[in-house]
Length: 220
Image: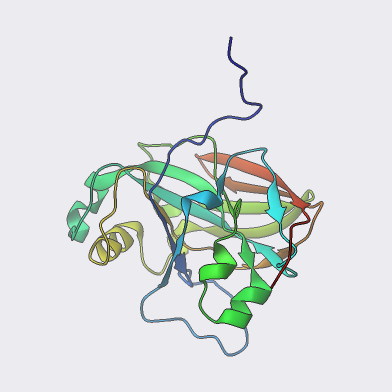
């Protein structure tokens, strides 16, 4: 018999993950920030994905790490230039995600690509849940057992149908692709090696991960 993995396999294998920044009404802006007319989009590669119980790896390049609880939408069929009133037809289901960010590199680069793209920087839940109304779900996080973020998806500035339609007019979304929809108030909670993070979305489930630091050849 083949050896079994010590954790569940990921529930989907996306070609890309589209992130959404500054998309909650209750977000507390950092000094100098303003809410954009349209949410900021960024791409996280599939190599950021890990599952429940796996470790987030903190590389030596990152000195300031943060975590964010988010609702993730998983696309069920090829989606291009879809109108908002048909967007729900393209949804496979939902899961919970933890959008990890190298906050120091985000500030250094201004663009978000490097800060969001390290391996293991997107833990997601064990299951894709369909048949639920995502319009008013509670999102929570806990760090080392202590309360972190708390918010509800009713406070999204741009809702799920709008996001799917908008993004599908920018790029074709393929089956298994994922949209992480933004994070509520208290975003950017600082974490470090050894911390234990728990992210929860009502009716969907949890994802829990510990942070481990590694040593790598460091030339930058």
